[in-house]
Image (cartoon, rainbow, N blue to C red; front, side):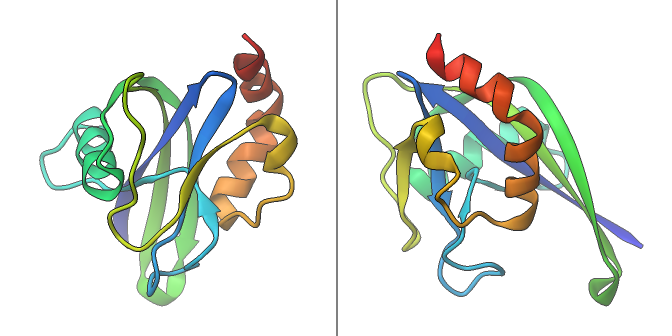
Length: 138
């Protein structure tokens, strides 16, 4: 079974968290997620998340460390997906601008529950909602 490593940025700024929709034509298209993408060969998680957010949202982030990794078996693809959620600091003086037909926005803890999330992103949000909400209130 192959392994697919994917990174997701957890960016909190001014009491809100950055989320984006999955791009059209992708698995779970239109569902909300923590933005990110696939790790390239030889790339660190920090390098991956900086590159992916720059490509997808024309926005600069720096990785401050890993929060959690969730694993999903994909038997039909003979693959194990490892989704690495990374605490990231975003640029203060600019805004993300979607580059691939998706939407993005900054959401307060009260707004998270009403969003239709991709499955692993929803699992992460449920597991870490208390600590994320606390970070939003600081």
